[in-house]
Length: 374
Ligand SMILES: *Cc1c(COP(=O)(O)O)cnc(C)c1O
Image (cartoon, rainbow, N blue to C red; front, side):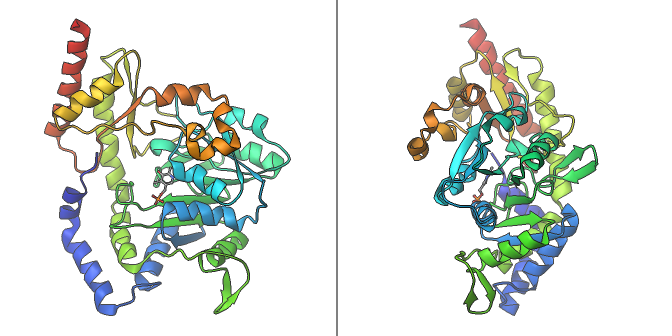
């Protein structure tokens, strides 16, 4: 699905030197490389505070911990997402309340949020799935009306711009808190685990820094129960180099997406991803919908020809055994259930060659033609 080896070859000299610099100074934790990357990311995103941490799941957990919620408080999230979004809610003794997604954007349906709000609702976690933003303007309106915090799960959309009526703004900096992951295959990925939290709120920033550092305000004085979550200097050094290329990487992904769009438009049953007018899609995934076409058969047909394709995600959160204790399987989420049966993601990355694209597309075409005949 991605080609991290070819991408590394392109930046090898720079990356190797940056890693050697860390090794030679031996400042592995909280060193200048971490500070340098944090400052670069703050200016790239136009956000006041970036708090690096160990991974994207920790970022979400730290964000929720910093809000000081009580067990039994409710958090609204989509069910159609990677498990980390919803898992941290339950891990902290909070109740995940699942809201259906929009059929076109695959993101939480903002028009259905208000009906899910109760006196216990304390946060909403919209997920910018596959690299395109949820309807943040409406989500912020509802959240502000009820005094609820918004934590954006921006793990798949870093670098994306969102058009608010007040102006363009980077996703992850619209809500009270934004979270991201630097997992290697993410749009901005390191060579191990990493994550970060963003906010413009000084109080929340101080609280999240404290939570991520054992609840410590002054060395060896611990005010609250926290955790230990750090981005290490080697990962930060790699990320600083890759951040400078993020916009070029996004352009490369968008070109691939455009090629797939043009190709898929000739087939009735293959629906290419809808582009929301307000959001610049950064194509962490290129995910099409299959209507009356056998998805498992296409997936197997492509696999036999060494073409990976993936179902993100075959089981939505509300149907996971993990959440049976919440009775989530009885939640009525018809769009989520429909989409989990239809979606298939095609390879997309920054080093894709025209001949690879041609090979993938011609095999999809062969499959469709063979299906039509049978
Ligand atoms: C990758 C991802 C995460 C978790 O990130 P990790 O770094 O793997 O912990 C959370 N949410 C979404 C939507 C993701 O895609």
